[in-house]
Image 1 (cartoon, protein in one colour):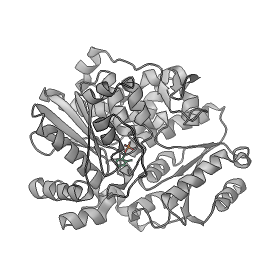
Image 2 (cartoon, protein in one colour):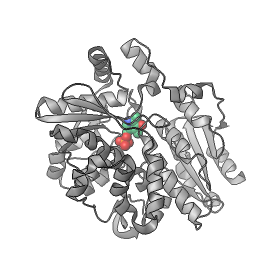
Image 3 (cartoon, rainbow, N blue to C red):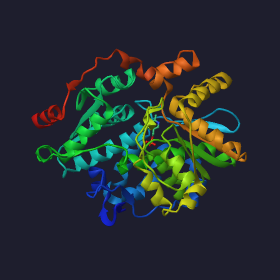
Image 4 (cartoon, rainbow, N blue to C red):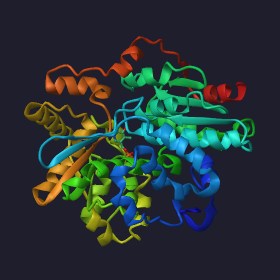
Length: 432
Ligand SMILES: *Cc1c(COP(=O)(O)O)cnc(C)c1O
């Protein structure tokens, strides 16, 4: 499979180079030259396949012969070792729980697949050592740290804003040690992001060590997100209903993977992009005008994005045709007050505890189902409520059970290096 840059159709890359680079040299996002159609026989026999077999069939044509089948099967198995249940909320709505991985958020899937793929290419021998440099506002850092832990040939350096991530998120970033270093930046997320960008452009650093980014536009994070739409369909197939999926969206990588899965033949009829107050895409669908704007802070902060990077991939999928986009995709936006109300109501009526991101997904789904009663709806629960403990416990007026898998984490010792300026970051990267 070849990948082209969305800024210039004549710039091509193979899978390995696109994974190592992240972005094309002209800063365009990579996009597969061809959307692979899966045969009907695959969907007919889906219930007979296990998670790894499903994932392998979905991804193999996008990787081609650059990773041999046996190694790719192993990578998919390492990626999908946890569960992806669709939990019934009522007769018409299910929650696809994507939080059973090591850092309790869906980003584990993309981060693990990318780490394993990059690890494979390093082992093959022609890349040398690589430093993954990433800025995080919370969820990305933990997923990347856990995904890349102990992967030979890779050092991970994570910048996070001091005092701006939740306690659990900080522990997930700072307690692993080994090849993972956490830099605690005296500033906000934008400062971290800015320093990372500057480092990539600084030849004194890039001459000294090979840098790569692990952010969500990398194809090795984007494409494997398709897996769980197929795994959800496997659980919903016997309902024999028209299916709609609602995806709480920020940078739109997750929903764009779902839309690609649909183009590959997965029988999901419609998608809802559920937004918080950052409503750039909701406005685009209403008005046909795409007007990026600065992000605003909300309680579903992983979706506080005013200019979603993956939106161009959605336009590409639908040939830049606004009517085609609208046929398959709806978008709605909800404020924090509605989000809290949804968490409270669902908890009161069913006992199920939503996190603020899943709650926005739930609201988007309910809005769509009001005028489409013949559908069965699934929303993506993208993080465990415990990651947003303060908000959730305040709203439901009750305690959230801490999953066993992270109980030990809270007692681990935080290890981070404090940095104040770009010079500090540069000093660290040059010295090591
Ligand atoms: C990153 C994240 C999102 C947004 O996903 P995108 O792929 O950027 O649209 C939603 N929910 C949670 C919990 C996240 O961490």
